[in-house]
Length: 261
Image 1 (cartoon, rainbow, N blue to C red):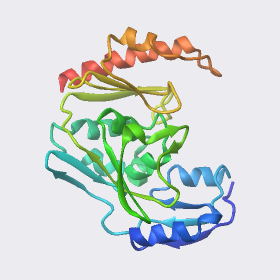
Image 2: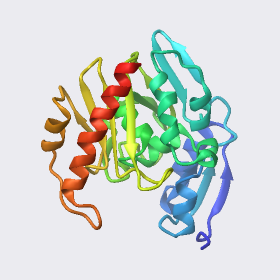
Image 3: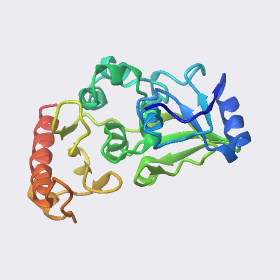
Image 4: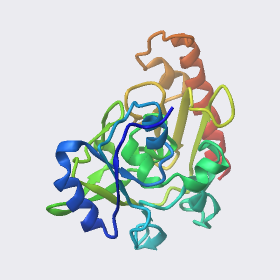
């Protein structure tokens, strides 16, 4: 299929993109970063933006930087760039988790900020951001603001990002040397049925595929206790108990991986 008609705009700065979002607000503009989710939705006409604002030529939105113990990742940084980066032991979980993101072409084009903005509850970046208490930095007409990832995801593909805001970076504020993320999909590269991330330093667990948003379990107990504490229901082709069993297995597996460092 082909997308519905739209008008293409190439932004040259974040402020320019914000101005376009504000000016074109009545015609449902969308931002284009890597396009790995949006373009597919447009082709199936699940998304019909009247205007497409291309961010890929905006300088300064890609890059990975260490600062004061935190890791700052620009919104246009690709999954592949993170996968190949030497982040050191404190943030190695981010590079290691990229192997679960689709296939190599998707990792090469898809971006960190685009994944966060899309807000898929099973997406690796959404889960990592919640687990590691990341901060999403967005710029809008009133300037920049910061939103904790744990308050950013509001519902299915729904976030706290305002329609006239652009994500500029994601900040991981603290080291997580004993963290890991794993998942299960029916085929390698498919969307995860269930994903589990753990941080042995805090004792927290994050789960994808068990709710409308990433589910954070503080002070998590055994894998069985984590799984039994979830409210799950049967879905087409996936009984609740099958999903619960995946949670038990994946939490245990992620903890083993995190313990190995």
